[in-house]
Length: 471
Image 1 (cartoon, rainbow, N blue to C red):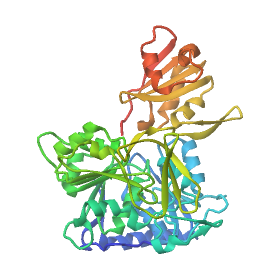
Image 2: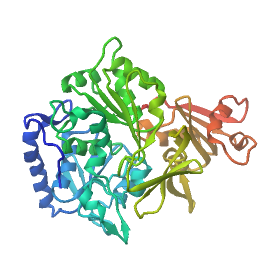
Image 3: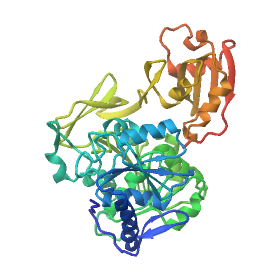
Image 4: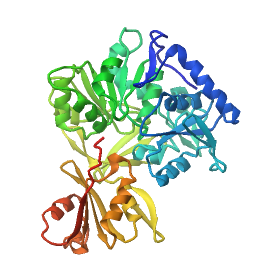
């Protein structure tokens, strides 16, 4: 199941490394086979393994368990132990995992969900933790099928179009043709921290497929030191993670990061300028839309270009999907499947598509027997007895949680501390219902921070959470 498009240039090259461990291509199979043997001892084969990163630090073993699960004929998913237990339970259940792996220990799930083996013989990764596309659609769209495998694959009479090795690395190989097969230079990917999203295992699989190198950067690592040690020339992640790397680079020196994929239309303009100033950048590019399947939209920025070029996305020619904007939302249709949306808002100007924010980032919770669709921060706040109405919104790069009801603000804050640091709000406001609605029947989230900050009455209490990471 572990397939390659491009073989490594030299088997002595490092395949995967962290600040304190590494594995070469020569050593890889031996380390994977040790893990496969442990899986077989537990009678695991075509099963889903859920790998949990511990202590805010991803290890080589965490990532190798992903590959070992695939090499064993199964598939994998992942999460972090600093998520709340409720979040972890949701992710594990949603992935239909048969076992949990952490600190190299395998824990069999006694009553796995029905149908917990792979949906399709070529599904190798069942991501559950990043983006609505992944969370809502992975039961239908497994990662990394080959073109031949997915053309005629059907479930319940519907054609399935999975992510192909060709599509997931297409933008990288297009914008950096020197990486494409037979040249001397290979991608050396500096991968920002965490199992928070599917980026780490997803990019691990991309790295494997094109015979490249990935150096994993954990929170707290010395970015400059690790960059110099790894000689990384490429960064692929979401904008805030890219920003965390670039912010750590000192002024007055240019680093040889030549290729950056900043996925998402919300990359700040000042980040693009910082990249130009601090890096010997050749190309900054954006794969937007359903990158878990095929890249549907793309944009490219090169030094000297107008920054607007990066924000104007163009449709990628692909015979398998259709795309439309309806009620300001971007919709995709793959093959014979129904129309779906990630709730990304878009505007069209001069034939290009411009990202205009996420309509919602909802999950389902139940309070007092009532189903409520709400964001993660809001759902956690609503678990506190006495919280009635709640809004999680951002303004000027600050994240506000504004709520009504009888709940004490310190209890709400304690609940927020359970969240991963980057999900925590900066400021919590306990306000009256009159101020919350501000005379309007329908709440307008974007206006709430300004209304609350300028209010002379209606604020019951205010608390600032200083332990917050913008990652």
